[in-house]
Length: 152
Image 1: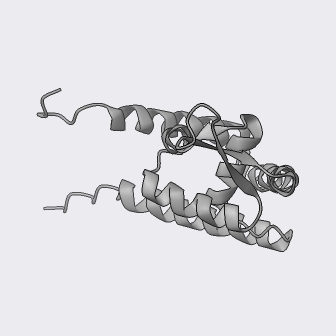
Image 2 (image 1 turned 30 degrees about the horizontal axis):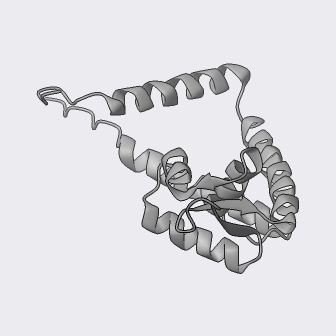
């Protein structure tokens, strides 16, 4: 009697790919003299696209908890890349915006990310790229649905 083939370890494989891709991007950013992590660069990109976002808006868009985002934002403020801005009508409410140095770094980092994306895509055929993107989208959609047997 033959053994049943082992199912692919999807969570492990995706997690491993995620870590490797983030390490690759971190090396690319560092080699270009950009001293931010890939997650920090995402904050810069979001603020470059829409200045004056609140922490809660950034947290939703990045799918991060507020505590982790606050720590990253604190580091970016300390580095002079991001500034907190109090609202005139409510001094307790603060939005985040890029400093001129942050705007410059966001542009430089975006160019590196584009190059890194292209390098990785060049490793795949057009068909492989399409299949990969469709599969990832399908997995994201499936992850949002209740599990079989779980009540909605």
